[in-house]
Length: 123
View 1 (cartoon, rainbow, N blue to C red):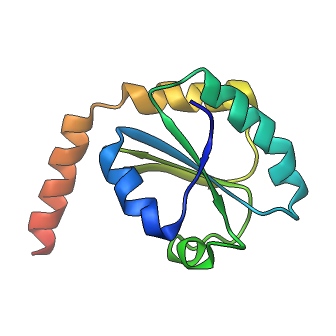
View 2 (view 1 turned 90 degrees about the horizontal axis):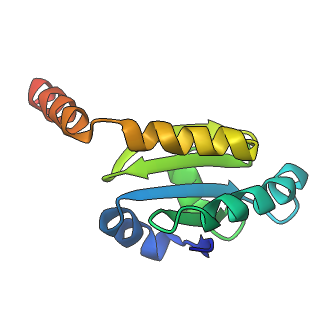
View 3 (view 1 turned 120 degrees about the horizontal axis):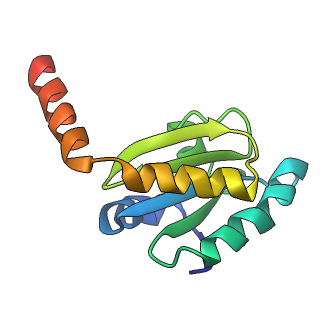
């Protein structure tokens, strides 16, 4: 699957209806963002089951603000609606592939169990 643009209007729907979503927060004027774009695109072609989405921080300031994006590019990964990774900076293709492997390897039943436990403790 090629990359797709995501907006605040469709963010919740994309996150809730896909198992893994990888977000690239970027801007047109950002040199490192432009350098990372082909890496992001090439890796997306190898993982058709994952949504690779781009968030233009200039156009989507509300979404960027919600996630407190202070530096771009910033990569964020959601799996089963849980944020698994968030980090500013560019990654190489091998680094991104390793990150995807690690996210796939997480036992999500344990993650959801831990989240439920934390929510009970806060209640």
